[in-house]
View 1 (cartoon, rainbow, N blue to C red):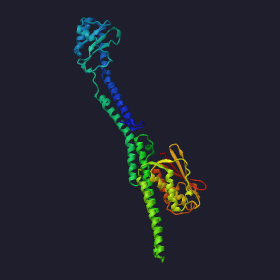
View 2 (cartoon, rainbow, N blue to C red; view 1 turned 120 degrees about the vertical axis):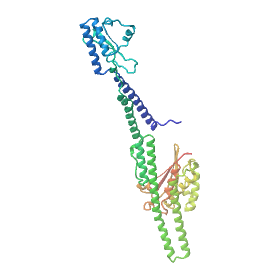
View 3 (cartoon, one colour; view 1 turned 90 degrees about the vertical axis):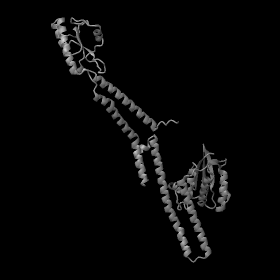
View 4 (cartoon, rainbow, N blue to C red; view 1 turned 30 degrees about the vertical axis):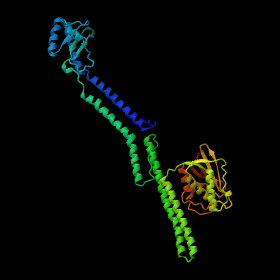
Length: 447
């Protein structure tokens, strides 16, 4: 199983859960133990009462003898049933009664007033209270009265073990919502906007800039929206331009049919117009197919020099040019990795366009050089070139630059189709002026 990437949501979610779980455990444990310890301590009222007993015992000790102390202990045991004894500085009884072994054993477990005292013990704890006037002179040791035994507060236990973990769990939910559900809600709203036809809508940049899976999803949405917007815009433009291009030959056909021209002239006119409309429809359908289907073309090693020879023969037959007017200056063998038919159609469109806009006695030259793992090829014509601002526009469908590149016919789809075919093979196609002339550049991977 492959581990998630460094910026994956897995690490953010895991880290967040780990921190909050440890925080819940730590807070619940520490607060619970704190409240529990505090709940085991004697209340201030109980401590004051017990210190009052010690002061009373000290007064008896100072004003009377051992017999008086024994009588006071009997009265005290009647008041506070249990067990009590007065001890001197040497931990010996101040009264006449001696301590038994069990009682001496109890003294080892005597606790101070400010110590924690659990209510879970089987017997009430033994406590010792030093005389308040002269603590070094003696102490009262007694079993803690039942009413003073501290009990753990259920309320604080609920706070420590339920309310605080619950609040931290809510915090975890809020953080997870901010981390996950918030961006997903934006994506949902964005998808609804696209569904309603708002193709220009875009996602919040804060989401698309994220480096995790949500950022990848946002960028995929952006790419999808851009592609959809371009496709819809292209189809609308093609429908608009194609309807315009078809009206002209249809009008000419209607005029020719209604005229008094002889049958042969009418037949030639019909054949020419039908051929033009057929070429227009074929090119338009091919462009739409390339843009919408994005076919995965099988790539092979192709010798560009040999392919140029084949294209040159066809171009000379169509245009009446001589082979010397279409030279190949590559020199070395040029092998590229591409789809043979796709590259042939792209080069054929470029070659026809170059011949159409070059003088009849001019040249269209193939050249190129190898650049690392790519071949940079170019086809130069000797036409007038185009304006610098229109170099990219010539690849738009139905673009005609007759003012700057006169001559020839066509519908302005050849270079558009050529670029689509080259890009589908992982290549690039762009134009630059030579002054005079125009250079069409191709970059294709080496075979």
